[in-house]
Image (tube, rainbow over all chains, first blue to last red; front, side, top):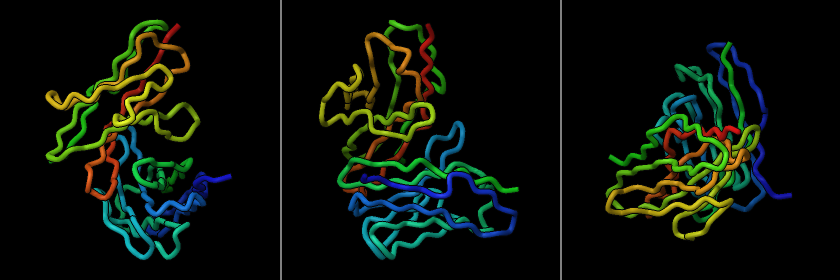
Length: 110
Length: 110
């Protein structure tokens, strides 16, 4: 069935390591987004991509990188430059204004 | 600066009581406004969109351009309404990026 899949559900990272979060959709949506969710701060936009091979920085892009080589996939790399990476990460895709969200990845730095 | 404000972090009401979740926005253009909901252990999902003027699960939201508000209302709260609610504007012509408020946790007590 159609949807958006994020993996893994839980991820533990040692300080100083880069880690990549996966986001795949089979909805044929052009646009994809990465949000970070922290308690009391709502969702903040990290990166977004409106079309393959193009992406834009969101409000909190520092310490993150993305790629959009395929329409279906929009992986997010949390680099060692991200000072406070422990958070819940949500991926979304959209056609027009309707967003579909993944189930999220909880990243913990240990 | 573009901004969306949800002043209440937590709203607790009794079952059967009216509910109003507040949302104020400050946008220079003409935003389209949405309410998203996240039930416990479920994905973030669209509740309603102002342009459709629908009533979903008994909730309605009226866009008040004079007060720049988009409050979510329901006349009689149900236990299953307990969830996290996010107000989210999109600035038309701004790349369809959703900007989320900090969210309001609604708790409906018996």
